[in-house]
Image 1 (tube, rainbow over the protein chains, first blue to last red):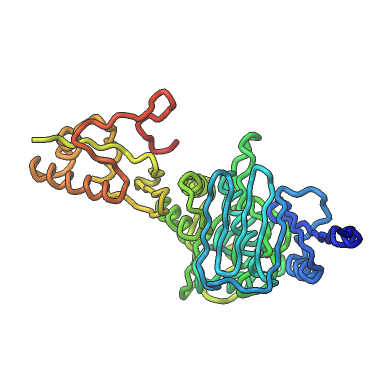
Image 2 (image 1 turned 135 degrees about the vertical axis):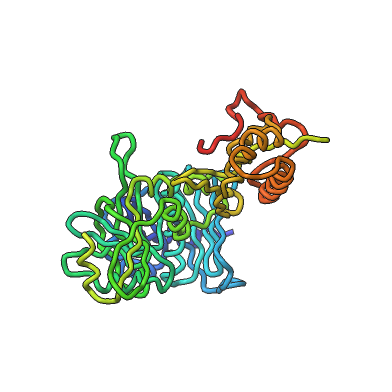
Length: 281
Length: 110
């Protein structure tokens, strides 16, 4: 039997990679498809780094066939240290111990975006942080979060931001707890590439969080205090968290209470014009 | 007449904040805000103090209610909390499963 063809067949397929760093956590994505890498370079521009180091490395298997149920909702489960992330358009596995994972999806930017959001939410949950459905921006060196469900005004308040405000996101805020070991209380908000209606990437910068505002549209611009219990409930209602994992659910519950006990939470009622920003910062 | 004992479910997380007791189920992420009576039951649910004693010592003095009615209402509430897996209830004292390993009566925040 001839072995003449073996060297060619055995040749390595070139793996292309890029590192996407969000919230200070670099994640490497590896694939064989240059067009997909180029799409990610464009999609995450500002968050792609030249760093060799990565906290997690994902191999992406691109498939041309669509999944059986493309509308299936997200499910995030963990078994023996291996996380499985499933949605109608993507399936991923991630093993924190080895810092490696695999993603199977078609060529599109949305599936891997969902995986990144979920993985970041899982990592943050262990560290006292979280992803929050909220816009966020930096003004005068401090970060302000604007939380609310769809139509609450996240995109509107982002669009109205003055030139001296740096937009971190109009959709999903990245909240990291400061280092307890350094006796450094408080939280930091990071910019994210996770966009909403504004379709504009946040700036890849961070700042200490000064306040969380719960958005409400009204006839005037005003800030009202809210009871701590309501603050905690509202925060929990806006957290981005999917994992079916009792320990992590408990962890994120306690994180929400820690947050509202350290960061002022108020209701921001606003009319949709730029004067609302006179109250911020 | 049998007595009812209650213990906190260790698989839920609980926090008291601003005078409100909130509970989250780790199983399905359901969030509950307990009323005053439910909060007393939760706080008193040590697995060894019978419900009638809790009612007599902690509920009747604080609420204008007949002891028999208070016990009946408290038992209904305890069973409701148990059905939502917030409390465990039993007609026998509920002892910690493994005190040596730190599985003591579940606290409000571990």
